[in-house]
Length: 187
Image (cartoon, rainbow, N blue to C red; front, side):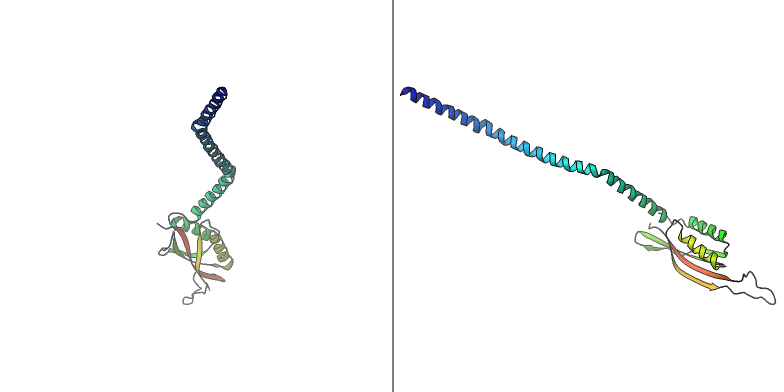
């Protein structure tokens, strides 16, 4: 019987040591291992999301290129400064080429509209209808943003001076006066 009793005591001690080992050493390590597995899963999910983001990178780069092209076009069409001289030179070159007579280009007081400023310019000239129409069309196609805000067209009439022929008059011409706005960045 003593042998049995000693065996039971040894068995209880072995079970106690095993339970103590489990609760003191194995269980805390098991919890740490579970935490590490959860961290690994979270990092793998984050890596998968970033991999998807990298897959979209060429599309994002293409969009960025398009936006930069639009921005460059915007800067061309609406420059940072008024640059009236350049615009007047372009308009004068068109008028010269089309043979417009009695040309007059007068910049007026600028008007501010939020992020941009509009500079009204009054342009007057005499020309036949086809040249007048071509002038308006070519101004419209300039790379800079311009908006016609007023247009007055009248038939030119001869000014007779005491028994003389009309001075500087061409039959079928129109006197045209237009007011347009050119835009630049508000400073």
